[in-house]
Length: 433
Length: 170
Ligand SMILES: Cc1cc2nc3c(=O)[nH]c(=O)nc-3n(C[C@H](O)[C@H](O)[C@H](O)COP(=O)(O)O)c2cc1C
Ligand code: SF4
Ligand code: FES
Image (cartoon, rainbow over all chains, first blue to last red; front, side, top):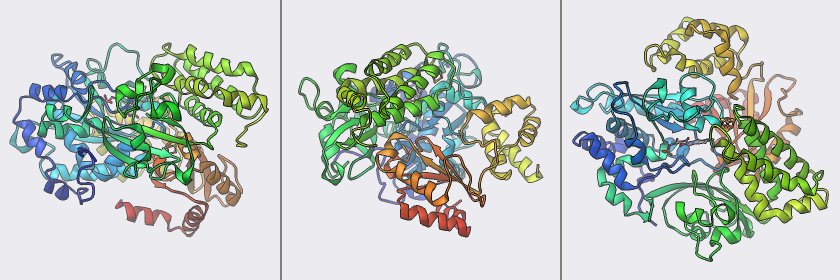
Protein backbone atom coordinates (compact mmCIF):
# COMPACT_ATOMS: atom_id res chain seq x y z
CA UNK A 1 0.00 0.00 0.00
CA UNK A 2 1.28 3.43 -0.87
CA UNK A 3 1.77 6.64 1.06
CA UNK A 4 -1.19 8.49 2.55
CA UNK A 5 -1.27 12.22 2.03
CA UNK A 6 -4.96 12.99 2.38
CA UNK A 7 -6.30 10.20 4.57
CA UNK A 8 -3.15 9.95 6.69
CA UNK A 9 -3.83 9.16 10.39
CA UNK A 10 -7.48 8.48 9.66
CA UNK A 11 -7.39 5.73 12.26
CA UNK A 12 -6.47 8.27 14.97
CA UNK A 13 -8.52 11.07 16.46
CA UNK A 14 -7.71 13.87 14.05
CA UNK A 15 -11.23 15.25 13.83
CA UNK A 16 -10.63 17.81 16.58
CA UNK A 17 -8.01 20.49 16.12
CA UNK A 18 -6.08 19.16 19.13
CA UNK A 19 -5.81 15.70 17.63
CA UNK A 20 -5.06 17.09 14.21
CA UNK A 21 -2.30 19.36 15.49
CA UNK A 22 -0.80 16.54 17.56
CA UNK A 23 -0.16 14.78 14.23
CA UNK A 24 1.60 17.78 12.72
CA UNK A 25 -1.52 19.49 11.46
CA UNK A 26 -1.28 23.22 10.60
CA UNK A 27 2.55 23.11 10.46
CA UNK A 28 2.37 23.99 6.77
CA UNK A 29 0.79 27.34 7.67
CA UNK A 30 3.86 28.30 9.66
CA UNK A 31 6.16 27.04 6.92
CA UNK A 32 4.22 28.86 4.18
CA UNK A 33 4.60 32.16 6.01
CA UNK A 34 8.37 31.71 5.90
CA UNK A 35 8.27 31.39 2.11
CA UNK A 36 7.72 34.04 -0.56
CA UNK A 37 4.29 33.49 -2.13
CA UNK A 38 5.81 32.86 -5.56
CA UNK A 39 7.89 30.01 -4.12
CA UNK A 40 4.76 28.28 -2.90
CA UNK A 41 3.20 28.56 -6.35
CA UNK A 42 6.45 27.20 -7.80
CA UNK A 43 6.35 24.16 -5.49
CA UNK A 44 2.75 23.46 -6.50
CA UNK A 45 3.80 23.68 -10.15
CA UNK A 46 6.68 21.27 -9.53
CA UNK A 47 4.36 18.83 -7.77
CA UNK A 48 2.47 18.23 -10.98
CA UNK A 49 -0.79 18.25 -8.97
CA UNK A 50 -3.75 18.25 -11.34
CA UNK A 51 -7.19 19.53 -10.38
CA UNK A 52 -9.10 16.77 -8.64
CA UNK A 53 -12.57 18.14 -9.46
CA UNK A 54 -12.70 16.31 -12.77
CA UNK A 55 -11.08 18.56 -15.37
CA UNK A 56 -7.53 17.67 -14.19
CA UNK A 57 -5.99 21.01 -15.13
CA UNK A 58 -2.54 21.56 -13.51
CA UNK A 59 -3.14 23.41 -10.24
CA UNK A 60 0.13 25.39 -10.19
CA UNK A 61 -0.47 26.65 -13.71
CA UNK A 62 -4.02 27.66 -12.81
CA UNK A 63 -2.68 29.60 -9.83
CA UNK A 64 -0.11 31.38 -11.99
CA UNK A 65 -2.90 32.70 -14.26
CA UNK A 66 -4.48 34.63 -11.38
CA UNK A 67 -4.44 38.33 -12.16
CA UNK A 68 -2.37 39.82 -9.35
CA UNK A 69 -1.95 43.26 -10.87
CA UNK A 70 -5.55 44.42 -11.14
CA UNK A 71 -5.53 46.12 -7.73
CA UNK A 72 -8.86 44.41 -6.97
CA UNK A 73 -9.34 41.97 -4.10
CA UNK A 74 -8.56 38.37 -5.00
CA UNK A 75 -10.76 35.48 -3.93
CA UNK A 76 -10.07 31.86 -3.27
CA UNK A 77 -13.02 29.48 -3.44
CA UNK A 78 -13.26 25.81 -2.60
CA UNK A 79 -15.54 23.73 -4.79
CA UNK A 80 -17.24 21.33 -2.38
CA UNK A 81 -20.34 20.94 -4.50
CA UNK A 82 -19.58 17.26 -5.17
CA UNK A 83 -22.64 16.15 -7.14
CA UNK A 84 -21.22 14.02 -9.95
CA UNK A 85 -22.98 10.66 -9.65
CA UNK A 86 -20.57 8.08 -8.25
CA UNK A 87 -18.43 10.65 -6.46
CA UNK A 88 -18.33 10.90 -2.67
CA UNK A 89 -14.67 11.44 -1.87
CA UNK A 90 -14.72 15.15 -0.94
CA UNK A 91 -17.59 14.52 1.37
CA UNK A 92 -15.58 11.75 3.10
CA UNK A 93 -12.56 13.99 3.57
CA UNK A 94 -14.58 16.90 4.96
CA UNK A 95 -16.63 14.66 7.19
CA UNK A 96 -13.63 12.89 8.74
CA UNK A 97 -10.75 15.40 8.53
CA UNK A 98 -12.23 18.90 8.16
CA UNK A 99 -8.99 20.49 9.31
CA UNK A 100 -7.05 19.09 6.34
CA UNK A 101 -9.21 21.21 4.03
CA UNK A 102 -9.07 24.26 6.28
CA UNK A 103 -5.27 24.07 6.48
CA UNK A 104 -5.11 23.83 2.68
CA UNK A 105 -7.46 26.81 2.34
CA UNK A 106 -5.21 28.95 4.57
CA UNK A 107 -1.96 28.08 2.78
CA UNK A 108 -3.47 28.42 -0.71
CA UNK A 109 -5.23 31.70 0.13
CA UNK A 110 -1.95 33.05 1.45
CA UNK A 111 -0.05 31.97 -1.67
CA UNK A 112 -2.62 33.71 -3.88
CA UNK A 113 -3.06 36.79 -1.71
CA UNK A 114 -6.74 36.27 -0.92
CA UNK A 115 -8.15 37.67 2.31
CA UNK A 116 -11.69 36.33 2.09
CA UNK A 117 -12.16 32.73 1.10
CA UNK A 118 -15.24 30.58 0.72
CA UNK A 119 -16.03 26.90 0.89
CA UNK A 120 -19.04 26.37 -1.38
CA UNK A 121 -20.55 23.11 -0.14
CA UNK A 122 -23.62 21.48 -1.63
CA UNK A 123 -26.63 22.29 0.55
CA UNK A 124 -27.62 18.67 1.08
CA UNK A 125 -24.45 18.18 3.13
CA UNK A 126 -25.70 20.58 5.81
CA UNK A 127 -24.41 18.46 8.67
CA UNK A 128 -20.94 18.51 7.14
CA UNK A 129 -21.20 22.27 6.59
CA UNK A 130 -21.92 22.52 10.33
CA UNK A 131 -18.88 20.38 11.13
CA UNK A 132 -16.74 22.62 8.95
CA UNK A 133 -18.08 25.71 10.70
CA UNK A 134 -17.17 24.28 14.09
CA UNK A 135 -13.71 23.31 12.83
CA UNK A 136 -13.23 26.82 11.42
CA UNK A 137 -14.14 28.26 14.82
CA UNK A 138 -11.43 26.06 16.36
CA UNK A 139 -8.92 27.32 13.80
CA UNK A 140 -9.81 30.96 14.65
CA UNK A 141 -9.44 30.15 18.35
CA UNK A 142 -5.96 28.71 17.77
CA UNK A 143 -4.90 31.72 15.74
CA UNK A 144 -4.76 30.14 12.27
CA UNK A 145 -7.51 32.40 10.92
CA UNK A 146 -8.41 36.04 11.45
CA UNK A 147 -6.14 39.06 11.75
CA UNK A 148 -2.34 38.83 11.68
CA UNK A 149 -2.23 35.05 11.62
CA UNK A 150 0.69 33.71 13.74
CA UNK A 151 2.15 37.22 13.75
CA UNK A 152 2.73 37.09 9.98
CA UNK A 153 0.77 40.22 9.19
CA UNK A 154 -1.48 38.14 6.93
CA UNK A 155 -5.26 38.33 7.47
CA UNK A 156 -7.75 35.75 6.30
CA UNK A 157 -11.43 35.13 6.92
CA UNK A 158 -12.87 31.79 5.88
CA UNK A 159 -16.59 31.15 5.37
CA UNK A 160 -18.78 28.18 4.56
CA UNK A 161 -21.48 28.84 1.96
CA UNK A 162 -24.17 26.21 1.36
CA UNK A 163 -25.67 25.60 -2.06
CA UNK A 164 -29.27 24.46 -2.34
CA UNK A 165 -29.49 21.54 -4.73
CA UNK A 166 -28.22 21.92 -8.32
CA UNK A 167 -25.58 19.70 -9.94
CA UNK A 168 -24.62 22.48 -12.33
CA UNK A 169 -23.31 24.60 -9.45
CA UNK A 170 -20.24 22.34 -9.46
CA UNK A 171 -19.25 24.00 -12.72
CA UNK A 172 -16.85 26.71 -11.69
CA UNK A 173 -18.62 29.76 -13.10
CA UNK A 174 -22.09 28.52 -12.13
CA UNK A 175 -20.70 28.13 -8.63
CA UNK A 176 -19.55 31.75 -8.64
CA UNK A 177 -22.95 32.94 -9.88
CA UNK A 178 -24.56 30.93 -7.12
CA UNK A 179 -22.17 32.36 -4.54
CA UNK A 180 -23.22 35.82 -5.71
CA UNK A 181 -26.80 34.92 -4.83
CA UNK A 182 -28.11 34.13 -8.30
CA UNK A 183 -29.32 31.14 -10.27
CA UNK A 184 -26.48 28.77 -11.09
CA UNK A 185 -26.13 29.57 -14.78
CA UNK A 186 -22.60 28.97 -16.13
CA UNK A 187 -20.93 32.05 -17.61
CA UNK A 188 -19.52 32.45 -21.10
CA UNK A 189 -15.74 32.13 -21.14
CA UNK A 190 -13.57 34.11 -21.71
CA UNK A 191 -13.20 36.04 -19.53
CA UNK A 192 -11.92 33.35 -17.17
CA UNK A 193 -12.33 33.43 -13.41
CA UNK A 194 -8.61 34.18 -13.01
CA UNK A 195 -9.36 37.71 -14.22
CA UNK A 196 -13.13 38.10 -13.78
CA UNK A 197 -14.38 35.74 -11.11
CA UNK A 198 -16.29 36.33 -7.90
CA UNK A 199 -17.81 39.85 -7.79
CA UNK A 200 -15.90 40.62 -10.98
CA UNK A 201 -12.57 40.11 -9.19
CA UNK A 202 -9.70 37.71 -9.90
CA UNK A 203 -10.59 34.33 -8.42
CA UNK A 204 -9.26 30.80 -8.19
CA UNK A 205 -11.68 27.91 -7.69
CA UNK A 206 -10.23 24.57 -6.61
CA UNK A 207 -11.67 21.23 -5.64
CA UNK A 208 -11.63 20.03 -2.01
CA UNK A 209 -9.14 17.25 -2.71
CA UNK A 210 -6.78 19.53 -4.66
CA UNK A 211 -6.75 21.97 -1.76
CA UNK A 212 -6.24 19.27 0.86
CA UNK A 213 -3.11 18.12 -1.04
CA UNK A 214 -1.42 21.52 -0.70
CA UNK A 215 -0.23 21.29 2.94
CA UNK A 216 1.75 18.11 2.18
CA UNK A 217 3.29 19.71 -0.90
CA UNK A 218 4.35 22.75 1.12
CA UNK A 219 5.83 20.59 3.90
CA UNK A 220 7.59 18.06 1.68
CA UNK A 221 8.20 19.96 -1.53
CA UNK A 222 6.80 19.64 -5.03
CA UNK A 223 9.51 17.22 -6.11
CA UNK A 224 8.63 14.73 -3.39
CA UNK A 225 4.99 14.83 -4.50
CA UNK A 226 5.95 14.38 -8.14
CA UNK A 227 7.86 11.22 -7.24
CA UNK A 228 4.63 9.50 -6.33
CA UNK A 229 2.68 8.24 -9.33
CA UNK A 230 3.62 7.74 -12.96
CA UNK A 231 4.49 10.35 -15.58
CA UNK A 232 2.08 13.28 -15.54
CA UNK A 233 -0.19 11.50 -13.08
CA UNK A 234 1.59 12.54 -9.91
CA UNK A 235 0.66 12.10 -6.29
CA UNK A 236 -2.19 10.25 -4.70
CA UNK A 237 -5.85 10.32 -5.67
CA UNK A 238 -9.01 9.66 -3.76
CA UNK A 239 -11.20 7.14 -5.53
CA UNK A 240 -14.77 6.63 -4.38
CA UNK A 241 -15.84 3.16 -5.41
CA UNK A 242 -19.45 2.01 -5.56
CA UNK A 243 -21.84 -0.38 -7.25
CA UNK A 244 -21.56 -4.16 -7.29
CA UNK A 245 -18.40 -4.56 -5.22
CA UNK A 246 -17.63 -6.07 -1.86
CA UNK A 247 -16.06 -2.98 -0.28
CA UNK A 248 -17.64 0.26 -1.45
CA UNK A 249 -15.88 3.30 0.00
CA UNK A 250 -13.29 6.03 -0.45
CA UNK A 251 -9.68 4.95 -1.04
CA UNK A 252 -6.48 6.92 -1.39
CA UNK A 253 -4.29 5.31 -4.03
CA UNK A 254 -0.93 6.12 -5.59
CA UNK A 255 -1.74 7.01 -9.17
CA UNK A 256 -0.38 4.14 -11.26
CA UNK A 257 -1.94 1.08 -9.60
CA UNK A 258 -3.53 -1.32 -12.08
CA UNK A 259 -7.29 -1.16 -12.46
CA UNK A 260 -7.34 -4.91 -11.91
CA UNK A 261 -5.70 -4.59 -8.50
CA UNK A 262 -8.06 -1.79 -7.55
CA UNK A 263 -11.12 -3.87 -8.41
CA UNK A 264 -10.04 -7.25 -7.08
CA UNK A 265 -7.72 -6.54 -4.15
CA UNK A 266 -9.24 -6.87 -0.68
CA UNK A 267 -7.51 -3.62 0.26
CA UNK A 268 -9.77 -1.81 -2.23
CA UNK A 269 -13.00 -2.87 -3.94
CA UNK A 270 -12.56 -6.49 -2.84
CA UNK A 271 -13.93 -7.98 -6.05
CA UNK A 272 -17.43 -8.28 -7.42
CA UNK A 273 -20.26 -8.88 -4.97
CA UNK A 274 -21.86 -12.30 -4.60
CA UNK A 275 -19.20 -13.94 -6.76
CA UNK A 276 -20.65 -12.46 -9.94
CA UNK A 277 -18.76 -11.44 -13.06
CA UNK A 278 -17.64 -7.92 -13.79
CA UNK A 279 -19.53 -6.40 -16.73
CA UNK A 280 -18.58 -2.74 -17.00
CA UNK A 281 -17.04 0.20 -15.17
CA UNK A 282 -17.56 3.96 -15.32
CA UNK A 283 -14.21 4.98 -13.85
CA UNK A 284 -14.49 8.74 -13.28
CA UNK A 285 -18.02 9.78 -12.37
CA UNK A 286 -21.15 9.47 -14.52
CA UNK A 287 -19.89 11.95 -17.14
CA UNK A 288 -17.05 9.79 -18.45
CA UNK A 289 -17.40 6.97 -21.00
CA UNK A 290 -18.39 3.52 -19.76
CA UNK A 291 -16.01 0.65 -20.58
CA UNK A 292 -16.79 -3.07 -20.77
CA UNK A 293 -14.72 -5.51 -18.69
CA UNK A 294 -12.34 -6.26 -21.56
CA UNK A 295 -11.42 -2.59 -22.04
CA UNK A 296 -11.31 -1.48 -18.42
CA UNK A 297 -8.82 -4.18 -17.39
CA UNK A 298 -6.67 -3.86 -20.52
CA UNK A 299 -6.30 -1.25 -23.23
CA UNK A 300 -7.22 -2.15 -26.81
CA UNK A 301 -3.49 -2.72 -27.36
CA UNK A 302 -3.52 -5.35 -24.61
CA UNK A 303 -1.58 -3.31 -22.01
CA UNK A 304 -2.81 -3.46 -18.42
CA UNK A 305 -5.01 -0.42 -17.74
CA UNK A 306 -3.64 1.75 -14.93
CA UNK A 307 -5.34 4.17 -12.57
CA UNK A 308 -3.73 7.23 -14.20
CA UNK A 309 -5.09 10.10 -16.27
CA UNK A 310 -3.16 8.89 -19.33
CA UNK A 311 -3.84 5.18 -19.14
CA UNK A 312 -7.58 5.57 -18.63
CA UNK A 313 -7.67 7.86 -21.69
CA UNK A 314 -5.65 5.43 -23.80
CA UNK A 315 -7.66 4.68 -26.92
CA UNK A 316 -9.48 8.03 -26.85
CA UNK A 317 -13.22 7.96 -27.17
CA UNK A 318 -13.18 4.75 -29.17
CA UNK A 319 -11.80 2.44 -26.51
CA UNK A 320 -10.81 4.66 -23.58
CA UNK A 321 -12.40 6.69 -20.81
CA UNK A 322 -11.20 9.20 -18.18
CA UNK A 323 -10.17 9.37 -14.53
CA UNK A 324 -12.49 12.38 -14.09
CA UNK A 325 -13.56 12.95 -10.52
CA UNK A 326 -12.55 9.47 -9.36
CA UNK A 327 -16.11 8.21 -8.99
CA UNK A 328 -15.59 4.54 -9.81
CA UNK A 329 -18.91 2.83 -10.61
CA UNK A 330 -18.76 -0.95 -10.98
CA UNK A 331 -21.48 -3.03 -12.66
CA UNK A 332 -21.87 -6.79 -12.58
CA UNK A 333 -23.22 -9.12 -15.25
CA UNK A 334 -26.84 -8.65 -14.17
CA UNK A 335 -26.81 -4.90 -14.93
CA UNK A 336 -29.01 -3.59 -17.72
CA UNK A 337 -26.84 -1.04 -19.51
CA UNK A 338 -29.85 0.50 -21.27
CA UNK A 339 -31.67 1.12 -18.02
CA UNK A 340 -28.56 2.55 -16.41
CA UNK A 341 -27.92 4.83 -19.38
CA UNK A 342 -31.54 5.97 -19.35
CA UNK A 343 -31.23 6.74 -15.63
CA UNK A 344 -28.19 8.97 -16.25
CA UNK A 345 -29.92 10.61 -19.23
CA UNK A 346 -32.82 11.42 -16.91
CA UNK A 347 -30.34 12.90 -14.45
CA UNK A 348 -28.73 15.14 -17.08
CA UNK A 349 -32.07 16.30 -18.39
CA UNK A 350 -33.14 17.21 -14.87
CA UNK A 351 -29.89 19.03 -14.13
CA UNK A 352 -29.40 21.01 -17.36
CA UNK A 353 -29.58 24.70 -16.48
CA UNK A 354 -31.43 25.31 -19.72
CA UNK A 355 -29.42 28.22 -21.10
CA UNK A 356 -28.29 26.49 -24.33
CA UNK A 357 -30.85 24.91 -26.63
CA UNK A 358 -28.69 21.93 -27.69
CA UNK A 359 -28.26 20.90 -24.06
CA UNK A 360 -31.74 21.76 -22.82
CA UNK A 361 -33.54 20.08 -25.72
CA UNK A 362 -30.98 17.37 -26.43
CA UNK A 363 -30.91 15.96 -22.90
CA UNK A 364 -34.71 15.78 -22.85
CA UNK A 365 -34.82 14.08 -26.19
CA UNK A 366 -32.20 11.49 -25.27
CA UNK A 367 -34.06 10.71 -22.06
CA UNK A 368 -37.32 10.22 -23.92
CA UNK A 369 -35.88 7.98 -26.62
CA UNK A 370 -33.94 5.87 -24.11
CA UNK A 371 -37.06 5.46 -22.01
CA UNK A 372 -38.86 4.25 -25.09
CA UNK A 373 -36.13 1.72 -25.90
CA UNK A 374 -35.95 0.44 -22.30
CA UNK A 375 -39.71 -0.07 -22.23
CA UNK A 376 -39.85 -1.98 -25.49
CA UNK A 377 -41.26 0.75 -27.73
CA UNK A 378 -38.01 1.60 -29.46
CA UNK A 379 -37.10 1.17 -33.10
CA UNK A 380 -33.76 0.27 -34.58
CA UNK A 381 -33.17 3.78 -35.84
CA UNK A 382 -33.64 5.17 -32.31
CA UNK A 383 -30.24 3.78 -31.38
CA UNK A 384 -28.50 5.90 -34.00
CA UNK A 385 -30.76 8.80 -33.16
CA UNK A 386 -29.52 9.10 -29.57
CA UNK A 387 -25.89 8.93 -30.68
CA UNK A 388 -26.63 11.62 -33.24
CA UNK A 389 -28.26 13.89 -30.66
CA UNK A 390 -25.33 13.39 -28.29
CA UNK A 391 -22.91 14.33 -31.05
CA UNK A 392 -24.88 17.44 -31.90
CA UNK A 393 -24.67 18.66 -28.31
CA UNK A 394 -20.91 18.21 -28.12
CA UNK A 395 -18.87 21.40 -28.25
CA UNK A 396 -21.92 23.58 -28.91
CA UNK A 397 -22.73 24.77 -25.44
CA UNK A 398 -21.68 27.38 -22.89
CA UNK A 399 -20.24 24.85 -20.47
CA UNK A 400 -18.97 21.30 -20.78
CA UNK A 401 -22.13 19.85 -19.22
CA UNK A 402 -23.36 19.45 -22.80
CA UNK A 403 -20.41 17.17 -23.64
CA UNK A 404 -20.60 15.36 -20.31
CA UNK A 405 -24.26 14.53 -20.85
CA UNK A 406 -23.60 13.00 -24.25
CA UNK A 407 -20.48 10.90 -23.59
CA UNK A 408 -22.13 8.27 -21.38
CA UNK A 409 -24.78 7.69 -24.06
CA UNK A 410 -22.40 7.52 -27.00
CA UNK A 411 -20.06 5.14 -25.18
CA UNK A 412 -22.86 2.87 -23.94
CA UNK A 413 -24.10 2.42 -27.50
CA UNK A 414 -20.56 1.94 -28.81
CA UNK A 415 -19.71 -0.86 -26.39
CA UNK A 416 -23.13 -2.41 -25.74
CA UNK A 417 -24.98 -1.94 -29.01
CA UNK A 418 -26.23 -5.55 -28.96
CA UNK A 419 -28.03 -4.85 -25.69
CA UNK A 420 -29.82 -1.85 -27.16
CA UNK A 421 -30.77 -3.94 -30.17
CA UNK A 422 -32.04 -6.75 -27.96
CA UNK A 423 -34.39 -4.28 -26.26
CA UNK A 424 -35.74 -3.23 -29.64
CA UNK A 425 -36.03 -6.74 -31.07
CA UNK A 426 -37.59 -8.32 -27.99
CA UNK A 427 -39.83 -5.29 -27.48
CA UNK A 428 -38.80 -5.10 -23.86
CA UNK A 429 -35.99 -5.36 -21.37
CA UNK A 430 -34.15 -8.71 -21.50
CA UNK A 431 -33.15 -8.13 -17.87
CA UNK A 432 -36.84 -7.78 -17.02
CA UNK A 433 -36.27 -4.50 -15.21
CA UNK B 1 -39.98 37.79 11.08
CA UNK B 2 -38.71 37.12 14.58
CA UNK B 3 -36.04 39.56 15.76
CA UNK B 4 -33.62 36.68 16.52
CA UNK B 5 -33.99 35.53 12.95
CA UNK B 6 -33.20 38.99 11.63
CA UNK B 7 -30.10 39.02 13.78
CA UNK B 8 -29.00 35.74 12.22
CA UNK B 9 -29.60 37.28 8.79
CA UNK B 10 -27.26 40.12 9.77
CA UNK B 11 -24.60 37.60 10.75
CA UNK B 12 -24.97 35.76 7.44
CA UNK B 13 -24.75 38.95 5.40
CA UNK B 14 -21.55 39.87 7.26
CA UNK B 15 -19.81 36.88 5.60
CA UNK B 16 -19.74 38.74 2.29
CA UNK B 17 -18.08 42.00 1.22
CA UNK B 18 -19.96 45.26 1.58
CA UNK B 19 -22.48 45.77 -1.17
CA UNK B 20 -22.64 42.01 -1.85
CA UNK B 21 -25.42 41.24 0.61
CA UNK B 22 -27.34 39.33 -2.02
CA UNK B 23 -24.78 36.53 -1.63
CA UNK B 24 -26.51 35.58 1.60
CA UNK B 25 -29.71 34.63 -0.19
CA UNK B 26 -29.19 30.84 -0.17
CA UNK B 27 -28.26 30.57 3.52
CA UNK B 28 -31.13 32.93 4.38
CA UNK B 29 -33.67 30.96 2.35
CA UNK B 30 -32.54 27.72 4.02
CA UNK B 31 -33.24 29.30 7.42
CA UNK B 32 -36.53 30.84 6.40
CA UNK B 33 -37.76 27.59 4.91
CA UNK B 34 -37.07 25.81 8.18
CA UNK B 35 -38.91 28.50 10.15
CA UNK B 36 -41.85 28.48 7.76
CA UNK B 37 -42.84 24.80 8.17
CA UNK B 38 -40.55 23.58 5.45
CA UNK B 39 -41.56 25.69 2.47
CA UNK B 40 -41.19 29.15 0.99
CA UNK B 41 -44.43 31.08 0.57
CA UNK B 42 -44.60 34.18 -1.58
CA UNK B 43 -45.10 36.23 1.59
CA UNK B 44 -41.84 35.06 3.19
CA UNK B 45 -39.91 35.42 -0.06
CA UNK B 46 -41.14 39.01 -0.25
CA UNK B 47 -39.90 39.60 3.29
CA UNK B 48 -36.48 38.26 2.33
CA UNK B 49 -36.43 40.57 -0.70
CA UNK B 50 -37.28 43.54 1.52
CA UNK B 51 -34.56 42.59 3.98
CA UNK B 52 -31.91 42.22 1.23
CA UNK B 53 -33.23 45.35 -0.52
CA UNK B 54 -33.67 43.50 -3.80
CA UNK B 55 -36.67 42.94 -6.07
CA UNK B 56 -38.99 40.06 -5.10
CA UNK B 57 -38.41 38.53 -8.54
CA UNK B 58 -34.74 38.09 -7.67
CA UNK B 59 -35.76 35.89 -4.75
CA UNK B 60 -38.36 33.92 -6.78
CA UNK B 61 -35.77 33.31 -9.50
CA UNK B 62 -33.40 31.75 -7.02
CA UNK B 63 -36.02 29.85 -5.05
CA UNK B 64 -37.31 28.14 -8.20
CA UNK B 65 -33.84 27.18 -9.46
CA UNK B 66 -32.63 25.10 -6.52
CA UNK B 67 -34.26 21.76 -5.75
CA UNK B 68 -33.89 22.03 -1.98
CA UNK B 69 -36.38 24.88 -1.83
CA UNK B 70 -40.02 23.80 -1.61
CA UNK B 71 -42.65 26.20 -2.84
CA UNK B 72 -45.62 24.31 -1.43
CA UNK B 73 -46.44 22.92 2.00
CA UNK B 74 -44.98 19.47 2.63
CA UNK B 75 -45.40 16.70 5.16
CA UNK B 76 -43.58 17.01 8.48
CA UNK B 77 -40.89 14.60 7.22
CA UNK B 78 -39.81 14.95 3.61
CA UNK B 79 -38.25 11.65 2.58
CA UNK B 80 -35.90 12.41 -0.30
CA UNK B 81 -34.65 9.15 -1.73
CA UNK B 82 -31.76 9.17 -4.16
CA UNK B 83 -32.89 7.72 -7.49
CA UNK B 84 -29.67 8.15 -9.52
CA UNK B 85 -27.82 5.31 -11.30
CA UNK B 86 -25.34 4.13 -8.64
CA UNK B 87 -28.06 3.96 -5.97
CA UNK B 88 -30.32 2.02 -8.34
CA UNK B 89 -27.56 -0.56 -8.88
CA UNK B 90 -27.92 -1.56 -5.23
CA UNK B 91 -31.64 -1.36 -4.59
CA UNK B 92 -32.89 2.24 -4.49
CA UNK B 93 -35.89 1.27 -6.63
CA UNK B 94 -36.85 -1.33 -4.04
CA UNK B 95 -36.65 1.19 -1.19
CA UNK B 96 -38.80 3.65 -3.12
CA UNK B 97 -41.38 0.93 -3.82
CA UNK B 98 -41.29 -0.11 -0.17
CA UNK B 99 -41.95 3.45 0.98
CA UNK B 100 -44.75 3.87 -1.52
CA UNK B 101 -46.43 0.67 -0.32
CA UNK B 102 -45.90 1.32 3.37
CA UNK B 103 -47.06 4.93 3.26
CA UNK B 104 -49.70 4.44 0.60
CA UNK B 105 -48.46 7.40 -1.44
CA UNK B 106 -46.78 8.00 -4.79
CA UNK B 107 -43.84 10.22 -5.61
CA UNK B 108 -44.34 13.88 -4.66
CA UNK B 109 -47.35 12.98 -2.56
CA UNK B 110 -48.01 13.53 1.13
CA UNK B 111 -49.55 10.95 3.45
CA UNK B 112 -53.08 11.67 4.70
CA UNK B 113 -51.84 12.23 8.26
CA UNK B 114 -49.57 15.01 6.95
CA UNK B 115 -46.47 13.28 8.33
CA UNK B 116 -44.63 12.13 5.20
CA UNK B 117 -43.85 13.50 1.75
CA UNK B 118 -41.96 11.25 -0.66
CA UNK B 119 -39.60 12.69 -3.27
CA UNK B 120 -36.95 11.37 -5.62
CA UNK B 121 -33.70 13.33 -5.61
CA UNK B 122 -30.40 13.06 -7.48
CA UNK B 123 -27.03 11.70 -6.34
CA UNK B 124 -26.43 12.75 -2.75
CA UNK B 125 -22.70 11.89 -2.72
CA UNK B 126 -23.48 8.78 -0.72
CA UNK B 127 -23.22 6.16 -3.48
CA UNK B 128 -20.91 4.00 -1.34
CA UNK B 129 -23.51 3.79 1.43
CA UNK B 130 -26.50 3.38 -0.86
CA UNK B 131 -29.46 3.26 -0.89
CA UNK B 132 -29.79 6.59 0.85
CA UNK B 133 -32.43 9.16 1.70
CA UNK B 134 -32.16 12.65 3.05
CA UNK B 135 -34.54 13.74 5.79
CA UNK B 136 -34.19 17.38 6.81
CA UNK B 137 -30.51 18.13 7.40
CA UNK B 138 -29.54 14.48 7.69
CA UNK B 139 -28.80 11.38 5.62
CA UNK B 140 -30.07 7.88 6.34
CA UNK B 141 -27.71 5.48 4.58
CA UNK B 142 -27.38 1.76 3.80
CA UNK B 143 -31.17 1.51 3.78
CA UNK B 144 -32.94 -1.85 3.81
CA UNK B 145 -36.72 -2.28 4.08
CA UNK B 146 -36.24 -3.18 7.76
CA UNK B 147 -34.08 -0.18 8.66
CA UNK B 148 -36.42 2.05 6.68
CA UNK B 149 -39.35 0.81 8.76
CA UNK B 150 -37.41 1.48 11.96
CA UNK B 151 -36.74 5.04 10.81
CA UNK B 152 -40.43 5.59 10.00
CA UNK B 153 -41.29 4.42 13.51
CA UNK B 154 -38.83 6.92 15.00
CA UNK B 155 -40.39 9.66 12.91
CA UNK B 156 -43.90 8.72 14.00
CA UNK B 157 -42.68 8.74 17.62
CA UNK B 158 -41.08 12.13 17.08
CA UNK B 159 -37.63 11.01 18.23
CA UNK B 160 -35.87 11.00 14.86
CA UNK B 161 -34.45 14.53 14.71
CA UNK B 162 -33.38 14.50 18.36
CA UNK B 163 -31.28 11.39 17.73
CA UNK B 164 -29.80 12.78 14.52
CA UNK B 165 -28.85 16.04 16.23
CA UNK B 166 -27.28 14.15 19.09
CA UNK B 167 -25.28 11.86 16.83
CA UNK B 168 -24.05 14.74 14.72
CA UNK B 169 -23.27 17.09 17.58
CA UNK B 170 -25.59 19.78 16.17
C1 LIG C 1 -21.15 20.13 -15.15
C2 LIG C 1 -19.92 20.25 -14.31
C3 LIG C 1 -19.96 19.87 -12.97
C4 LIG C 1 -18.84 19.97 -12.16
N1 LIG C 1 -18.93 19.58 -10.86
C5 LIG C 1 -17.85 19.71 -10.06
C6 LIG C 1 -17.93 19.35 -8.68
O1 LIG C 1 -18.97 18.91 -8.18
N2 LIG C 1 -16.82 19.51 -7.92
C7 LIG C 1 -15.65 20.00 -8.43
O2 LIG C 1 -14.69 20.14 -7.70
N3 LIG C 1 -15.55 20.34 -9.73
C8 LIG C 1 -16.62 20.21 -10.54
N4 LIG C 1 -16.51 20.60 -11.86
C9 LIG C 1 -15.22 21.15 -12.33
C10 LIG C 1 -15.14 22.65 -12.03
O3 LIG C 1 -15.71 23.37 -13.11
C11 LIG C 1 -13.69 23.14 -11.88
O4 LIG C 1 -12.96 22.66 -12.95
C12 LIG C 1 -13.03 22.70 -10.61
O5 LIG C 1 -13.75 23.12 -9.49
C13 LIG C 1 -11.66 23.27 -10.52
O6 LIG C 1 -10.96 22.75 -9.42
P1 LIG C 1 -9.70 21.81 -9.60
O7 LIG C 1 -8.86 22.42 -10.68
O8 LIG C 1 -9.04 21.81 -8.29
O9 LIG C 1 -10.24 20.48 -9.99
C14 LIG C 1 -17.63 20.48 -12.70
C15 LIG C 1 -17.59 20.86 -14.04
C16 LIG C 1 -18.71 20.74 -14.84
C17 LIG C 1 -18.63 21.17 -16.27
S1 SF4 D 1 -24.35 23.26 -21.51
FE1 SF4 D 1 -26.27 22.82 -20.44
S2 SF4 D 1 -25.74 23.12 -18.30
FE2 SF4 D 1 -24.09 24.13 -19.47
S3 SF4 D 1 -24.77 26.24 -19.68
FE3 SF4 D 1 -25.56 25.16 -21.46
S4 SF4 D 1 -27.65 24.52 -20.86
FE4 SF4 D 1 -26.56 25.07 -18.99
S1 FES E 1 -26.28 7.82 -6.77
FE1 FES E 1 -27.38 7.91 -4.92
S2 FES E 1 -25.97 8.89 -3.62
FE2 FES E 1 -24.90 8.84 -5.50
